Length: 133
Image (cartoon, rainbow, N blue to C red; front, side, top):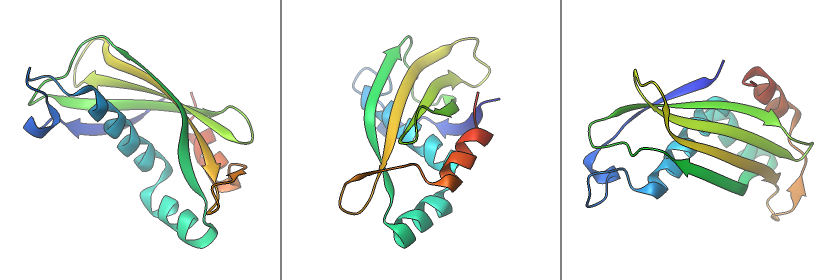
């Protein structure tokens, strides 16, 4: 079962054609991932251990643009690809829609304060397993 994060499309999210600007989908995906993992836990992880996430790779397929006023769902499933990498499969759906508007695959890794690669923490792995496919 995917994790679902609600997004409201505001005028500021759109470009001159009235469609959501392509880069804003990455922001929607980021918010959904933060809520899936827990904002408080991400803050604690960085504050206490210096570990944070960085994007390793991102792929997006645009099928249809969302527009001003749309209510969207960001549907996310995730899996640990290795001890170091988490892969988030994320889709943007219009509430009540029949197909995904945008599909994305975002791969994250953890780094420490020195920007050195570190394994995914055990508590993060547990959260990923809970939100798996």
